[in-house]
Image (cartoon, rainbow, N blue to C red; front, top):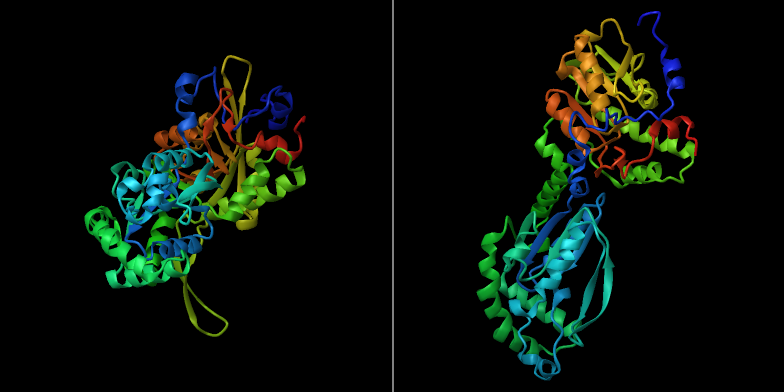
Length: 468
């Protein structure tokens, strides 16, 4: 930088406004009107992964669901039973309850089921009825909160195309008829206080014909058929692996192969909860931000090239491993990006770190870009550091600067904690060979171009300069 230029420190101190990572010019995002850029912001919400589990009565559907829930221990999972949506019986029907067909599609209040599922898919909590098989009515309900995975279980789930359309995965539990009958006898006599004669009469009169007429024909809609139900551990393990893969892919990752979102766990979500809380102290904000940043940095380093390498262990054995990429540097976007430098230094001993300042001067949208970069940066892989990707404008300016210095686009990995979909679209479209690594995709931007739900102005909270 020339001697007549202001220093980076002077520029920060002279700035009368907050520095936003999501920088915008003249109220536009890369030339797009605000209304167009923000359109659909509230719709950019991650949908839950809905799994339908169908099959005959006592086929082992509940056991399959319980095993899936047990293995998905790092995800929020909720179970919704089709049995909860039986119609309550009228007085006339109660008087002839033994002639009522509970295995017929008309026995269920499917419209109520669809209403509850739609609310859960939109991120709203719902009250699911609890059907009492002794009184044949729904007198109470249970509150079900939005979750990452919704397991929808019932004998006739695949019968109605509207319900099938909600599902990302359809599983049919296929169990021998004799096994199902034996389980049903044991369940109904012990749990529902029914005599064996009544159970067998209901089975021959309603259950078996309904299975043949309504349930078995829906087997063709299943994506996966599990023989032996909960006893088939191999099938359930494969299903859980597939679910985890799908959950690790945000919808934007399917559009942009250069976007990587680290897989969420309860630990990661807990750290996000703390740093997003406006009441969190500076000390805790820094501590948990550093933990998250370290995870993002480690994930980003995994995308660097490596070479195979063999070493001799202290036991005299040969270990075939890999050698780290040596030609590497970091570049932080001042000032929020500087919060990520310590994590990078902790992972990469003696790494060089450059700096870029993108400053808006006045109200005419002009940008002043200042940089201090390694002289040989064109020969290095670059980790670009900025904790928040908002509109994408400041990121675009920083990336353009790196490319102008001779850094190949494919050698840049952009690391941040949270990313707005609008910024992802801008950066990924403009630089398809660059990689973005982030820990969460946000809902979008508000009218002030702030990331929502967001975590506030990151630099102020991290460095303790928030006026509040």
